[in-house]
Length: 159
Image (cartoon, rainbow, N blue to C red):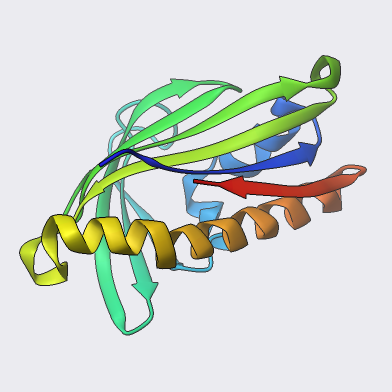
């Protein structure tokens, strides 16, 4: 299965966008499916930070255990999912228009346990439910970024 990718173009520099995402506990401000995020060990930012995210998608709630595996400020934040759902995710911030705007890409390659449908469940969920939720989350991120900047283009895409 290829990774799920969603993107948004934001009218803010990568550094300004990074300020919105650097504290992973604040991801609940723009991720509608994340009910709470608590740090569980390691540093509070950067590679080695571990966290538990209480995630709700429809009637399903689970604790998503993650570890930051990549941190290249203000370009890339990567995570490894190590709970019931496993896999890897990555936020990539690409400067546009000489660095005044940012393309934010969210990619995930997830593997579901058998009780969530296994491989078939992951494919179906990624292409339908999760893609829609993540696009909505990026619209929420755009709103947060716009509150501190000139605004967001609202241009969303996903595959």
